[in-house]
Amino acid sequence: MASFKITGGRHLKGEIVPQGAKNEALQILCAVLLTPEPVTIHNIPSIRDVNQLIDLLGDLGVRRTMLNDSSIRFEANDVNTDYMESDSFRQKAAALRGSVMLLGPMLARFRKGRIPRPGGDKIGRRRLDTHFLGFEKLGAEFSYDQEDGGFYRVDAKNLKGTYMLLDEASVTGTANVLMAAVMAEGTTTIYNAACEPYLQQLCLMLNRMGAKISGVGSNLLTIEGVEKLGGTEHTMLPDMIEIGSFIGLAAMTKSEITIKNCQVPMLGVIPDVFKRLGIQLEIRGDDIFVPAQEHYRIDSYLDGSTLTVADAPWPGFTPDLLSIVLVTAIQAQGTVLIHQKMFESRLFFVDKLIEMGAQIILCDPHRATVIGLNRDTPLRGIRMTSPDIRAGVALLIAAMSARGVSIIDNIEQIDRGYQHIDTRLNAIGAEIIRL
Ligand SMILES: CC(=O)N[C@H]1[C@@H](OP(=O)(O)OP(=O)(O)OC[C@H]2O[C@@H](n3ccc(=O)[nH]c3=O)[C@H](O)[C@@H]2O)O[C@H](CO)[C@@H](O)[C@@H]1O
Ligand SMILES: C=C(OP(=O)(O)O)C(=O)O
Image 1: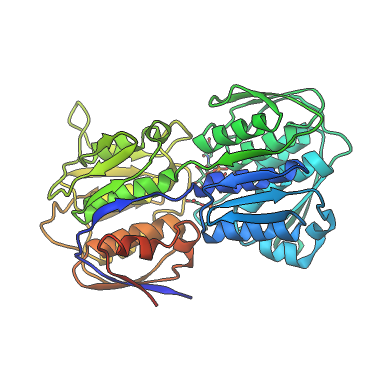
Image 2: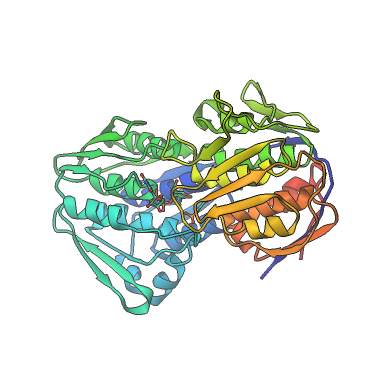
Protein backbone atom coordinates (compact mmCIF):
# COMPACT_ATOMS: atom_id res chain seq x y z
CA MET A 1 0.00 0.00 0.00
CA ALA A 2 1.62 3.27 -1.12
CA SER A 3 1.26 6.65 0.60
CA PHE A 4 1.74 10.34 -0.13
CA LYS A 5 3.66 12.59 2.25
CA ILE A 6 2.45 16.13 1.67
CA THR A 7 3.99 19.31 3.00
CA GLY A 8 1.15 21.80 3.11
CA GLY A 9 1.10 25.55 2.57
CA ARG A 10 2.78 25.64 -0.84
CA HIS A 11 1.29 28.00 -3.42
CA LEU A 12 1.31 26.58 -6.93
CA LYS A 13 1.85 28.59 -10.08
CA GLY A 14 1.83 27.47 -13.67
CA GLU A 15 0.07 25.51 -16.36
CA ILE A 16 -1.40 22.06 -16.09
CA VAL A 17 -2.84 19.90 -18.86
CA PRO A 18 -5.75 17.64 -17.90
CA GLN A 19 -5.41 13.96 -18.74
CA GLY A 20 -7.80 12.14 -21.05
CA ALA A 21 -11.11 11.37 -19.36
CA LYS A 22 -11.13 8.23 -17.20
CA ASN A 23 -14.81 7.43 -17.49
CA GLU A 24 -14.87 8.07 -21.23
CA ALA A 25 -11.81 5.87 -21.72
CA LEU A 26 -13.49 2.93 -19.98
CA GLN A 27 -16.45 3.07 -22.41
CA ILE A 28 -14.41 3.71 -25.54
CA LEU A 29 -11.93 0.92 -24.84
CA CYS A 30 -14.72 -1.62 -24.45
CA ALA A 31 -16.15 -0.50 -27.81
CA VAL A 32 -13.04 -1.71 -29.68
CA LEU A 33 -14.47 -5.21 -29.26
CA LEU A 34 -17.32 -4.37 -31.62
CA THR A 35 -15.24 -4.72 -34.79
CA PRO A 36 -12.43 -6.91 -36.15
CA GLU A 37 -11.01 -3.82 -37.88
CA PRO A 38 -8.34 -1.56 -36.34
CA VAL A 39 -9.53 1.14 -33.93
CA THR A 40 -7.01 3.80 -32.93
CA ILE A 41 -7.58 5.66 -29.68
CA HIS A 42 -5.76 8.86 -28.70
CA ASN A 43 -5.38 10.74 -25.40
CA ILE A 44 -5.65 7.59 -23.29
CA PRO A 45 -4.88 8.41 -19.65
CA SER A 46 -2.23 6.24 -18.02
CA ILE A 47 -4.15 5.42 -14.84
CA ARG A 48 -4.69 2.16 -12.99
CA ASP A 49 -8.27 1.42 -14.07
CA VAL A 50 -7.59 2.16 -17.72
CA ASN A 51 -4.34 0.17 -17.78
CA GLN A 52 -6.10 -2.77 -16.17
CA LEU A 53 -8.84 -2.66 -18.80
CA ILE A 54 -6.26 -2.50 -21.60
CA ASP A 55 -4.59 -5.58 -20.08
CA LEU A 56 -7.92 -7.37 -19.97
CA LEU A 57 -8.50 -6.60 -23.65
CA GLY A 58 -5.07 -8.10 -24.37
CA ASP A 59 -5.99 -11.23 -22.40
CA LEU A 60 -9.17 -11.51 -24.46
CA GLY A 61 -6.98 -11.64 -27.59
CA VAL A 62 -7.20 -8.01 -28.74
CA ARG A 63 -3.96 -6.99 -30.49
CA ARG A 64 -2.59 -3.70 -29.14
CA THR A 65 0.02 -1.56 -30.85
CA MET A 66 1.41 1.32 -28.82
CA LEU A 67 1.72 4.30 -31.20
CA ASN A 68 2.96 6.76 -28.59
CA ASP A 69 2.52 7.42 -24.84
CA SER A 70 -1.21 7.97 -25.13
CA SER A 71 -2.28 6.42 -28.44
CA ILE A 72 -2.92 2.73 -29.05
CA ARG A 73 -4.23 0.82 -32.06
CA PHE A 74 -6.51 -2.09 -31.14
CA GLU A 75 -7.47 -5.01 -33.38
CA ALA A 76 -10.11 -7.39 -32.07
CA ASN A 77 -9.92 -9.90 -34.93
CA ASP A 78 -9.13 -12.97 -32.84
CA VAL A 79 -11.13 -12.69 -29.63
CA ASN A 80 -10.98 -15.63 -27.25
CA THR A 81 -14.47 -15.70 -25.74
CA ASP A 82 -13.53 -18.70 -23.55
CA TYR A 83 -11.20 -16.45 -21.58
CA MET A 84 -14.30 -14.92 -19.94
CA GLU A 85 -14.81 -18.23 -18.07
CA SER A 86 -11.30 -18.27 -16.60
CA ASP A 87 -10.28 -17.51 -13.01
CA SER A 88 -7.84 -14.93 -14.33
CA PHE A 89 -10.68 -13.02 -16.02
CA ARG A 90 -12.82 -13.19 -12.87
CA GLN A 91 -10.01 -11.81 -10.80
CA LYS A 92 -8.91 -9.04 -13.16
CA ALA A 93 -12.36 -7.86 -14.24
CA ALA A 94 -13.44 -7.63 -10.60
CA ALA A 95 -10.76 -5.01 -9.96
CA LEU A 96 -12.56 -2.15 -11.71
CA ARG A 97 -16.02 -0.81 -12.42
CA GLY A 98 -15.49 -0.12 -16.11
CA SER A 99 -15.05 -3.82 -16.97
CA VAL A 100 -18.85 -4.19 -16.78
CA MET A 101 -19.00 -2.48 -20.17
CA LEU A 102 -17.30 -5.47 -21.81
CA LEU A 103 -20.70 -7.17 -21.64
CA GLY A 104 -22.53 -5.06 -24.24
CA PRO A 105 -19.94 -5.36 -27.02
CA MET A 106 -19.33 -9.07 -26.32
CA LEU A 107 -23.05 -9.74 -26.45
CA ALA A 108 -23.44 -7.72 -29.66
CA ARG A 109 -20.62 -9.41 -31.51
CA PHE A 110 -20.28 -12.89 -29.98
CA ARG A 111 -23.76 -13.29 -28.44
CA LYS A 112 -22.30 -14.02 -25.03
CA GLY A 113 -20.97 -11.93 -22.16
CA ARG A 114 -19.58 -12.79 -18.72
CA ILE A 115 -18.55 -10.57 -15.85
CA PRO A 116 -17.78 -10.96 -12.17
CA ARG A 117 -19.31 -8.43 -9.79
CA PRO A 118 -17.33 -5.36 -10.86
CA GLY A 119 -15.13 -3.33 -8.53
CA GLY A 120 -14.75 0.44 -8.37
CA ASP A 121 -15.40 2.76 -5.49
CA LYS A 122 -17.29 1.51 -2.46
CA ILE A 123 -19.47 4.58 -2.28
CA GLY A 124 -22.90 3.03 -1.87
CA ARG A 125 -25.10 0.44 -3.50
CA ARG A 126 -24.08 0.24 -7.13
CA ARG A 127 -26.71 -1.89 -8.70
CA LEU A 128 -26.54 -3.28 -12.21
CA ASP A 129 -30.26 -3.89 -12.79
CA THR A 130 -30.45 -1.29 -15.57
CA HIS A 131 -27.78 -3.13 -17.56
CA PHE A 132 -29.39 -6.57 -17.36
CA LEU A 133 -32.98 -5.38 -17.79
CA GLY A 134 -31.81 -3.65 -20.97
CA PHE A 135 -30.03 -6.74 -22.30
CA GLU A 136 -33.12 -8.84 -21.55
CA LYS A 137 -35.31 -6.39 -23.46
CA LEU A 138 -33.05 -6.95 -26.46
CA GLY A 139 -33.69 -10.68 -26.16
CA ALA A 140 -30.73 -11.89 -24.10
CA GLU A 141 -30.99 -14.43 -21.31
CA PHE A 142 -29.50 -13.42 -18.02
CA SER A 143 -28.29 -15.59 -15.16
CA TYR A 144 -26.47 -14.82 -11.97
CA ASP A 145 -24.29 -17.13 -9.94
CA GLN A 146 -23.98 -16.06 -6.29
CA GLU A 147 -20.90 -18.26 -5.77
CA ASP A 148 -17.40 -16.75 -5.61
CA GLY A 149 -18.64 -13.23 -4.98
CA GLY A 150 -21.04 -13.23 -7.92
CA PHE A 151 -20.75 -13.96 -11.65
CA TYR A 152 -23.13 -12.58 -14.28
CA ARG A 153 -23.90 -14.28 -17.60
CA VAL A 154 -25.78 -13.00 -20.64
CA ASP A 155 -26.41 -15.09 -23.75
CA ALA A 156 -28.47 -14.48 -26.86
CA LYS A 157 -29.18 -16.34 -30.08
CA ASN A 158 -30.42 -13.16 -31.63
CA LEU A 159 -30.71 -9.57 -30.45
CA LYS A 160 -33.82 -7.69 -31.54
CA GLY A 161 -34.40 -3.96 -31.40
CA THR A 162 -37.16 -2.72 -29.12
CA TYR A 163 -38.37 0.24 -27.07
CA MET A 164 -37.09 0.47 -23.54
CA LEU A 165 -37.45 2.92 -20.69
CA LEU A 166 -34.40 2.55 -18.47
CA ASP A 167 -35.27 2.28 -14.79
CA GLU A 168 -32.59 4.89 -14.08
CA ALA A 169 -30.30 7.03 -16.23
CA SER A 170 -27.28 4.87 -15.48
CA VAL A 171 -24.07 6.00 -17.18
CA THR A 172 -22.40 2.62 -17.65
CA GLY A 173 -25.84 1.00 -18.07
CA THR A 174 -26.68 3.25 -21.03
CA ALA A 175 -23.27 2.66 -22.61
CA ASN A 176 -23.65 -1.11 -22.20
CA VAL A 177 -27.16 -1.38 -23.64
CA LEU A 178 -26.28 1.02 -26.46
CA MET A 179 -23.28 -1.10 -27.46
CA ALA A 180 -25.43 -4.23 -27.37
CA ALA A 181 -28.08 -2.57 -29.54
CA VAL A 182 -25.92 -1.25 -32.38
CA MET A 183 -25.86 -4.62 -34.15
CA ALA A 184 -29.32 -5.82 -33.07
CA GLU A 185 -31.96 -6.53 -35.71
CA GLY A 186 -34.27 -3.55 -36.22
CA THR A 187 -34.65 -0.35 -34.24
CA THR A 188 -33.97 0.14 -30.53
CA THR A 189 -35.21 3.19 -28.65
CA ILE A 190 -33.64 3.94 -25.27
CA TYR A 191 -35.57 6.45 -23.20
CA ASN A 192 -34.21 7.88 -19.92
CA ALA A 193 -30.73 7.34 -21.37
CA ALA A 194 -27.81 9.00 -19.59
CA CYS A 195 -26.31 11.71 -21.82
CA GLU A 196 -22.95 12.66 -20.26
CA PRO A 197 -20.30 13.98 -22.68
CA TYR A 198 -18.68 10.52 -22.36
CA LEU A 199 -21.79 8.93 -23.79
CA GLN A 200 -22.00 11.53 -26.52
CA GLN A 201 -18.41 10.70 -27.42
CA LEU A 202 -19.22 6.98 -27.47
CA CYS A 203 -22.22 7.57 -29.77
CA LEU A 204 -20.11 9.69 -32.14
CA MET A 205 -17.42 7.03 -32.23
CA LEU A 206 -19.94 4.24 -32.88
CA ASN A 207 -21.51 6.29 -35.69
CA ARG A 208 -18.07 6.72 -37.25
CA MET A 209 -17.76 2.93 -37.07
CA GLY A 210 -20.98 2.62 -39.08
CA ALA A 211 -23.65 2.57 -36.36
CA LYS A 212 -26.86 4.53 -36.84
CA ILE A 213 -27.56 6.33 -33.59
CA SER A 214 -29.65 9.48 -33.41
CA GLY A 215 -30.65 11.67 -30.47
CA VAL A 216 -27.02 11.96 -29.36
CA GLY A 217 -26.77 14.23 -26.30
CA SER A 218 -30.42 13.72 -25.36
CA ASN A 219 -32.14 11.17 -23.10
CA LEU A 220 -33.83 9.51 -26.06
CA LEU A 221 -31.51 7.48 -28.24
CA THR A 222 -32.70 5.75 -31.40
CA ILE A 223 -30.48 3.03 -32.78
CA GLU A 224 -31.07 1.41 -36.14
CA GLY A 225 -29.25 -1.89 -36.02
CA VAL A 226 -26.54 -2.56 -38.63
CA GLU A 227 -24.92 -5.85 -39.59
CA LYS A 228 -21.37 -4.94 -38.72
CA LEU A 229 -19.12 -2.10 -37.62
CA GLY A 230 -15.76 -1.03 -39.03
CA GLY A 231 -12.60 0.61 -37.71
CA THR A 232 -12.15 4.25 -36.70
CA GLU A 233 -10.00 6.76 -34.81
CA HIS A 234 -11.11 8.45 -31.62
CA THR A 235 -9.66 11.09 -29.30
CA MET A 236 -10.73 11.24 -25.66
CA LEU A 237 -11.98 14.49 -24.12
CA PRO A 238 -10.00 16.08 -21.29
CA ASP A 239 -11.12 14.71 -17.92
CA MET A 240 -13.75 17.10 -16.57
CA ILE A 241 -13.41 15.70 -13.06
CA GLU A 242 -9.70 16.44 -13.13
CA ILE A 243 -10.44 19.96 -14.39
CA GLY A 244 -12.86 20.53 -11.49
CA SER A 245 -10.33 19.08 -9.05
CA PHE A 246 -7.68 21.56 -10.26
CA ILE A 247 -10.09 24.50 -9.84
CA GLY A 248 -10.80 23.48 -6.23
CA LEU A 249 -7.12 22.86 -5.58
CA ALA A 250 -6.17 26.33 -6.85
CA ALA A 251 -8.75 28.03 -4.62
CA MET A 252 -7.82 26.12 -1.47
CA THR A 253 -4.06 26.62 -1.90
CA LYS A 254 -4.19 30.27 -3.12
CA SER A 255 -2.55 29.16 -6.34
CA GLU A 256 -2.54 30.69 -9.79
CA ILE A 257 -3.17 27.91 -12.26
CA THR A 258 -3.97 27.80 -15.95
CA ILE A 259 -5.75 24.60 -16.88
CA LYS A 260 -5.01 24.03 -20.55
CA ASN A 261 -7.25 22.76 -23.36
CA CYS A 262 -10.38 22.14 -21.30
CA GLN A 263 -12.94 21.85 -24.15
CA VAL A 264 -14.97 24.30 -22.09
CA PRO A 265 -18.31 23.84 -23.93
CA MET A 266 -18.29 20.17 -22.80
CA LEU A 267 -17.99 21.05 -19.10
CA GLY A 268 -21.68 21.84 -18.63
CA VAL A 269 -22.44 23.52 -15.29
CA ILE A 270 -19.09 22.63 -13.70
CA PRO A 271 -17.44 26.09 -14.01
CA ASP A 272 -20.63 27.79 -12.76
CA VAL A 273 -20.82 25.64 -9.65
CA PHE A 274 -17.26 26.62 -8.68
CA LYS A 275 -18.12 30.26 -9.45
CA ARG A 276 -21.02 30.03 -6.98
CA LEU A 277 -18.46 29.17 -4.30
CA GLY A 278 -16.98 32.58 -5.09
CA ILE A 279 -14.01 31.32 -7.10
CA GLN A 280 -12.93 33.60 -9.92
CA LEU A 281 -12.44 31.77 -13.18
CA GLU A 282 -11.47 33.27 -16.48
CA ILE A 283 -12.08 31.38 -19.68
CA ARG A 284 -9.15 32.25 -21.96
CA GLY A 285 -9.81 30.62 -25.31
CA ASP A 286 -10.00 26.95 -24.37
CA ASP A 287 -8.04 27.37 -21.11
CA ILE A 288 -9.36 28.09 -17.63
CA PHE A 289 -7.30 30.60 -15.67
CA VAL A 290 -7.76 30.52 -11.89
CA PRO A 291 -6.08 33.49 -10.16
CA ALA A 292 -4.61 33.21 -6.66
CA GLN A 293 -7.41 34.25 -4.31
CA GLU A 294 -7.07 35.18 -0.66
CA HIS A 295 -10.83 35.00 -0.08
CA TYR A 296 -13.82 33.59 -1.92
CA ARG A 297 -17.37 34.03 -0.79
CA ILE A 298 -20.11 31.44 -1.20
CA ASP A 299 -23.17 32.75 -2.99
CA SER A 300 -26.60 32.43 -1.44
CA TYR A 301 -30.01 32.13 -3.09
CA LEU A 302 -32.03 35.20 -4.07
CA ASP A 303 -34.06 34.96 -0.86
CA GLY A 304 -30.86 34.87 1.17
CA SER A 305 -31.08 31.15 2.03
CA THR A 306 -28.08 28.80 2.10
CA LEU A 307 -26.70 27.54 -1.20
CA THR A 308 -27.10 23.82 -1.91
CA VAL A 309 -24.79 21.98 -4.29
CA ALA A 310 -26.38 18.68 -5.28
CA ASP A 311 -25.66 16.05 -7.91
CA ALA A 312 -28.04 15.06 -10.69
CA PRO A 313 -27.83 13.07 -13.91
CA TRP A 314 -26.26 15.10 -16.74
CA PRO A 315 -26.75 17.97 -17.55
CA GLY A 316 -26.94 18.27 -13.75
CA PHE A 317 -23.81 18.46 -11.63
CA THR A 318 -21.73 15.29 -11.61
CA PRO A 319 -21.59 13.39 -8.27
CA ASP A 320 -17.88 12.80 -8.89
CA LEU A 321 -17.09 16.45 -8.13
CA LEU A 322 -19.10 16.86 -4.93
CA SER A 323 -16.23 15.74 -2.67
CA ILE A 324 -14.06 18.39 -4.35
CA VAL A 325 -16.68 21.11 -3.93
CA LEU A 326 -17.04 20.10 -0.29
CA VAL A 327 -13.34 20.36 0.47
CA THR A 328 -13.04 23.64 -1.45
CA ALA A 329 -15.78 25.22 0.66
CA ILE A 330 -13.74 24.66 3.85
CA GLN A 331 -11.76 27.88 3.39
CA ALA A 332 -14.54 29.91 1.75
CA GLN A 333 -16.52 32.62 3.43
CA GLY A 334 -20.09 31.47 4.08
CA THR A 335 -21.99 28.21 4.28
CA VAL A 336 -23.00 25.58 1.75
CA LEU A 337 -25.07 22.42 1.96
CA ILE A 338 -23.58 19.54 -0.01
CA HIS A 339 -26.26 17.04 -1.02
CA GLN A 340 -24.92 13.79 -2.50
CA LYS A 341 -28.16 12.31 -3.81
CA MET A 342 -26.84 9.36 -5.79
CA PHE A 343 -24.43 7.64 -3.43
CA GLU A 344 -25.10 7.01 0.26
CA SER A 345 -21.54 6.31 1.43
CA ARG A 346 -19.52 8.99 -0.25
CA LEU A 347 -19.48 11.66 2.45
CA PHE A 348 -18.08 9.71 5.38
CA PHE A 349 -14.57 10.94 4.61
CA VAL A 350 -15.53 14.29 6.18
CA ASP A 351 -14.48 12.89 9.59
CA LYS A 352 -10.86 13.31 8.41
CA LEU A 353 -11.50 16.88 7.35
CA ILE A 354 -13.11 17.61 10.71
CA GLU A 355 -10.03 16.15 12.42
CA MET A 356 -7.94 18.57 10.35
CA GLY A 357 -9.97 21.48 11.73
CA ALA A 358 -12.74 21.92 9.15
CA GLN A 359 -16.18 23.06 10.27
CA ILE A 360 -18.47 20.46 8.77
CA ILE A 361 -21.71 18.97 10.06
CA LEU A 362 -22.57 15.60 8.57
CA CYS A 363 -26.36 15.88 8.62
CA ASP A 364 -27.01 12.33 7.36
CA PRO A 365 -25.27 9.97 4.90
CA HIS A 366 -26.31 12.13 1.95
CA ARG A 367 -25.85 15.67 3.28
CA ALA A 368 -23.08 17.72 4.86
CA THR A 369 -23.04 21.40 5.76
CA VAL A 370 -19.72 23.18 5.37
CA ILE A 371 -19.21 26.36 7.35
CA GLY A 372 -16.32 28.13 5.65
CA LEU A 373 -13.32 29.16 7.77
CA ASN A 374 -12.56 32.14 5.51
CA ARG A 375 -8.83 31.42 6.17
CA ASP A 376 -9.17 32.45 9.83
CA THR A 377 -7.46 29.18 10.74
CA PRO A 378 -5.57 26.80 8.46
CA LEU A 379 -6.25 23.06 8.46
CA ARG A 380 -3.74 20.89 10.37
CA GLY A 381 -1.77 18.11 8.67
CA ILE A 382 -2.72 14.57 9.85
CA ARG A 383 -2.37 10.94 8.77
CA MET A 384 -5.37 9.59 6.86
CA THR A 385 -6.49 6.93 4.38
CA SER A 386 -8.01 7.49 0.98
CA PRO A 387 -11.41 5.73 0.98
CA ASP A 388 -12.30 6.34 -2.68
CA ILE A 389 -10.90 8.07 -5.71
CA ARG A 390 -12.55 11.49 -5.35
CA ALA A 391 -12.41 11.62 -1.54
CA GLY A 392 -8.73 10.75 -1.97
CA VAL A 393 -8.12 13.82 -4.11
CA ALA A 394 -10.25 15.94 -1.79
CA LEU A 395 -7.99 14.84 1.09
CA LEU A 396 -4.94 15.62 -1.03
CA ILE A 397 -6.27 19.15 -1.62
CA ALA A 398 -6.96 19.56 2.10
CA ALA A 399 -3.45 18.35 2.93
CA MET A 400 -1.86 20.72 0.38
CA SER A 401 -3.68 23.64 2.00
CA ALA A 402 -2.88 22.57 5.57
CA ARG A 403 -0.23 23.70 8.01
CA GLY A 404 2.38 20.97 8.48
CA VAL A 405 2.82 17.52 7.03
CA SER A 406 0.08 15.03 6.15
CA ILE A 407 0.30 11.40 5.11
CA ILE A 408 -2.37 9.88 2.90
CA ASP A 409 -2.37 6.07 2.82
CA ASN A 410 -3.98 3.81 0.23
CA ILE A 411 -3.21 6.19 -2.64
CA GLU A 412 -3.83 3.34 -5.08
CA GLN A 413 -7.37 4.72 -4.92
CA ILE A 414 -6.14 8.05 -6.27
CA ASP A 415 -3.96 6.35 -8.90
CA ARG A 416 -7.11 4.65 -10.25
CA GLY A 417 -8.08 7.93 -11.83
CA TYR A 418 -5.39 10.60 -11.64
CA GLN A 419 -2.32 10.23 -13.83
CA HIS A 420 1.02 10.81 -12.02
CA ILE A 421 -0.74 13.40 -9.89
CA ASP A 422 2.25 13.89 -7.55
CA THR A 423 4.72 14.55 -10.39
CA ARG A 424 2.38 16.89 -12.22
CA LEU A 425 1.54 18.96 -9.15
CA ASN A 426 5.16 19.03 -7.96
CA ALA A 427 6.10 20.50 -11.35
CA ILE A 428 4.11 23.63 -10.48
CA GLY A 429 5.21 23.97 -6.88
CA ALA A 430 3.58 21.27 -4.73
CA GLU A 431 5.60 19.17 -2.28
CA ILE A 432 4.29 15.63 -2.47
CA ILE A 433 6.49 12.58 -1.91
CA ARG A 434 5.37 9.09 -2.87
CA LEU A 435 6.37 6.68 -0.10
C1 LIG B 1 -16.91 4.00 -14.65
C2 LIG B 1 -17.90 5.11 -14.59
O1 LIG B 1 -18.26 5.70 -15.60
N1 LIG B 1 -18.29 5.46 -13.37
C3 LIG B 1 -19.23 6.56 -13.21
C4 LIG B 1 -20.62 6.05 -13.48
O2 LIG B 1 -20.86 4.97 -12.60
P1 LIG B 1 -22.13 4.02 -12.81
O3 LIG B 1 -22.47 3.92 -14.26
O4 LIG B 1 -21.79 2.79 -12.06
O5 LIG B 1 -23.25 4.83 -12.07
P2 LIG B 1 -24.80 4.91 -12.43
O6 LIG B 1 -25.01 6.02 -13.39
O7 LIG B 1 -25.28 3.56 -12.82
O8 LIG B 1 -25.44 5.26 -11.04
C5 LIG B 1 -24.79 5.95 -10.02
C6 LIG B 1 -25.65 6.00 -8.79
O9 LIG B 1 -26.63 6.96 -8.96
C7 LIG B 1 -27.91 6.40 -8.80
N2 LIG B 1 -28.75 7.04 -9.81
C8 LIG B 1 -28.38 6.99 -11.12
C9 LIG B 1 -29.19 7.58 -12.08
C10 LIG B 1 -30.37 8.21 -11.67
O10 LIG B 1 -31.13 8.73 -12.49
N3 LIG B 1 -30.66 8.26 -10.35
C11 LIG B 1 -29.86 7.69 -9.41
O11 LIG B 1 -30.17 7.73 -8.23
C12 LIG B 1 -27.73 4.92 -9.00
O12 LIG B 1 -28.70 4.19 -8.31
C13 LIG B 1 -26.35 4.71 -8.46
O13 LIG B 1 -26.33 4.55 -7.07
O14 LIG B 1 -21.56 7.11 -13.26
C14 LIG B 1 -21.58 7.61 -11.91
C15 LIG B 1 -22.70 8.65 -11.85
O15 LIG B 1 -22.38 9.76 -12.63
C16 LIG B 1 -20.21 8.15 -11.54
O16 LIG B 1 -20.22 8.49 -10.17
C17 LIG B 1 -19.12 7.12 -11.79
O17 LIG B 1 -17.86 7.74 -11.68
C1 LIG C 1 -16.83 6.57 -8.81
C2 LIG C 1 -15.90 6.67 -9.73
O1 LIG C 1 -15.33 5.67 -10.40
P1 LIG C 1 -15.79 4.12 -10.54
O2 LIG C 1 -17.17 4.16 -11.12
O3 LIG C 1 -14.79 3.59 -11.51
O4 LIG C 1 -15.72 3.52 -9.18
C3 LIG C 1 -15.32 7.99 -10.12
O5 LIG C 1 -14.70 8.05 -11.20
O6 LIG C 1 -15.48 8.96 -9.37
